[in-house]
Image (tube, rainbow over all chains, first blue to last red; front, side, top):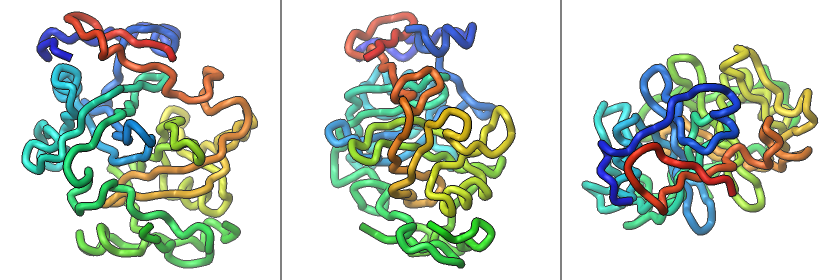
Length: 141
Length: 141
């Protein structure tokens, strides 16, 4: 992963067949220029966080070998860990059939991925084992 | 998971503190009324597919115990498996810190989750181990 971001290219999205069965990376960015990326632990596959990338952040991720997202709230590139030390070393990137979603298998450095200090952002589950009328409860586990 | 969808309620999103640390489910739907949901294998955590839910499909998922998404292309509820037999039995749902993304741990019935007949939609990885200038290649494995 040593190519400069500006030398990395994405393929054009020609046909449904080429997008789904082809071996050229042709990511689809939405109307806001973003593609969702789920970061998972590269050893356990545990979901860590869901974030978004624009074309530039995706190319920087590929060039750097570390996760670079696009912050929708701050409206700027977000090199994960640059301020916290919680870098994500990218071990593998997978793309889905229609190439509009990514999975990043990462080695999470630092204490964890979440700003709340949890090791994963998905630290709560819905209490669906005890259904009932009214507001759905969460369980922290 | 036997409560009727119309009796299931979501909490209001009061404060950042209550959303992040509270135990009331207060999902955030985007400008189009959708929340992303990553379905993963309940045993291995392998990513299966990323889809979207609106409020109604999420309540139906909770009521039914099977994944019901919202199809952005068809603009309608999408009970996964209703036509293919590839139902997803929901074993657990997790929500992230700001409650704008879901992980569904599912038992995938039928041959697999993808319309291409692959067991996962993420059947290709980026060839980031052989970086170079030009179009990024995919590897099917």
